Amino acid sequence: MEIEPDYMELQWYGLSDKFLEVVNLQDTLAMRYGHLVFCLALLPQNACAQEKPSGDAATMVESVPDEEIFIAAGFEQTDGAWSKCGDPGTLSYESGTIMQRGDFNNDGSPDALVTEGGTYCFGMAGTGYTLVSRKPDGNWMMMDERIGIPRFLSTKGSEGWPDIEVGGPGFCFPVIRWNGQEYALNRKEYEGRPCGN
Image (tube, rainbow, N blue to C red; front, top):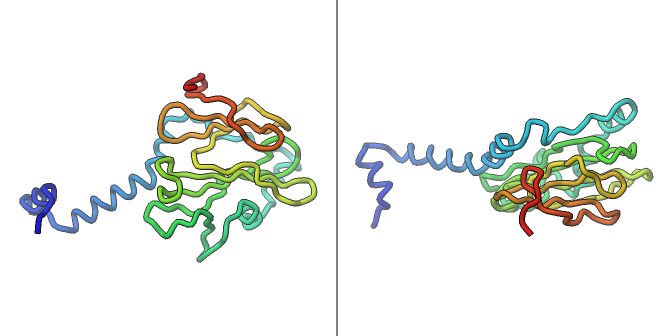
């Protein structure tokens, strides 16, 4: 049986298998939460901030039950957690979270951004998102869903919907814009400057 060199060195120094388990756990946690640290460290403080709606809009947005939002985004509840992507239970998996609520396009109807995490479903980006909006008739519409770390920008597309920068590994990110039918590629940017083709 051949022992890997790193393991032999650890044995030579008298380190046990428990140490290796801790190292593996640290690597797993780094993979699981690394993208969040990356996002928080590199994005400006207000990058993910959304202006809170005021008055009736604020009350309306906050009064929407979480369950309604998750169902609108296509999530299912299992053992108290909301999931969508089909992760088989890997260590990097993070169940669905309502990352942000608001009236993102100022039309008086509630909107929500739901995220889910893990490398099994979302690769090196580690995150996927679903953007939903409740229409005046009470039905929800899925505005966009894709792999990446969403960030609302101040620029806007059709019907007042904010452009979304879809972050991930690298330094040149797609910016998508609502065209009245769907969020489609509008440009690529890095720190507010054009990049790529």
